[in-house]
Image 1 (spheres, rainbow, N blue to C red):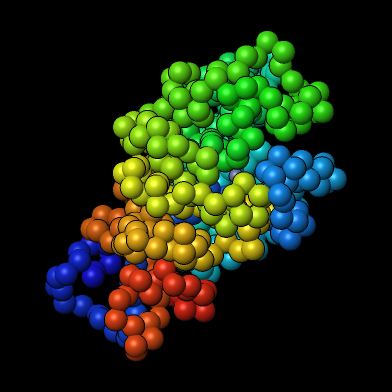
Image 2: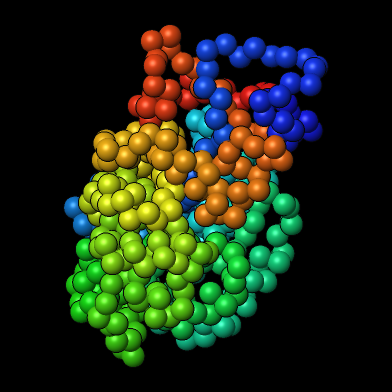
Length: 372
Ligand SMILES: [Zn+2]
């Protein structure tokens, strides 16, 4: 492999020049964490695992209300941790842009998903305009790409969902979707724990009627299911949900460790892959996962989906995530023209199946960035 000016110039040919022998390592593209919330890093270990997702989320909300702003130091440390475990690119959800400056000072590339909530938002277009102006004020850099996204179908009104989609046309459109059984009940019947929480927060919208269908069909009726859609979680997805996503060329982001922590349950990883939908991987935030090591997330996928080839799990953690985030020209594979953000993972002598080894639990101490 020849690297020139930070980009891969050639693979498999050698035109002369200095050579570095890396020893017994696997070289792979930097990993892509397609769903995290770096600004919640200060909550690490503070929101105990839940038995239902709405219960867990309301604990998180009350903890969040206890601070006036997101402390910056845990964000800086989380970025360092993501880099140390081999991540080059994140899809990072933010409500405040507290992560922007720390990311600007780091080697991580990111899509910054500026998330909006509002189930009874009186002026969706006005809200979108206001936040679009915040985005316009950020220092423009090529490797940090801000865009607007909604939180979830139970926390964003149909009018706000569509206003966000109009503003973010052509960019990745990330949304928490099919995460919990309570979300499915809410969309089918308009009842349950999410409704109770909206009422308790005084944001219930009495004009809203439940669509009476599954989460993907709901978004489809609103015109929001296409190749830009990044549907995060999918614990409750039926084969019908998965087939609609696959047909549209959308991406599904699996975050299995977070699903366990929040009480959402176990995502049907085998069915995800069997459907043919593009599957990316995310850790979610440090409020619902012990660390940002994406190799550990891939190992969890391996446990949950023992028949899926390791190659496909590794593609999810690299190229499929880069594609979902619109960064496939820079990251996700070792090809001429892409950025040379490459990892060397130390291999023990006994390893015969390298791909299987890479999804068996790689620790940061085994990982080196090439050229560092
Ligand atoms: Zn999330």
